[in-house]
Image 1 (tube, one colour):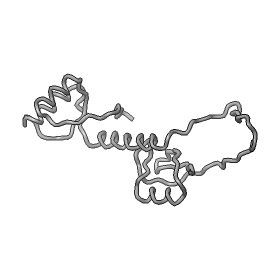
Image 2: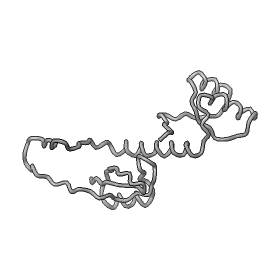
Image 3: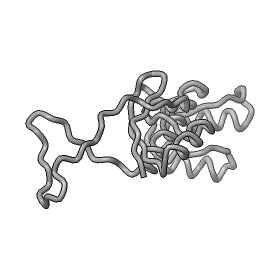
Image 4: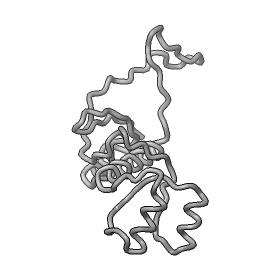
Length: 150
């Protein structure tokens, strides 16, 4: 396995694990790698600092220097899931009207032909969603929070 620092055209830098360089290239060319910040699939390798082992054979764990930043590498599947979630958020932000807490009312109006059909998003309580489903109103739920402000 190999880890690469990657970046999108907006200069968002993130890490991802690959079996080897060929696997990275294949996934990059097919658009299978997406930026977790903006969802872009135009990905390139970013400059990386070399990882040089200096404590070879020692049992003690290296300690971070004072003032250095330490991070834990997330599971690469988590990073990919975040990237897809961000892409969904961006698609909704660009292509759906935000009706806020009036989602149930607007969905009914569209369903019953009282207003023009259009893509909408907003919030509904569990009771409102249940009532919409019982009326046969088609809608979907997103299994993660959508912060469309940024």
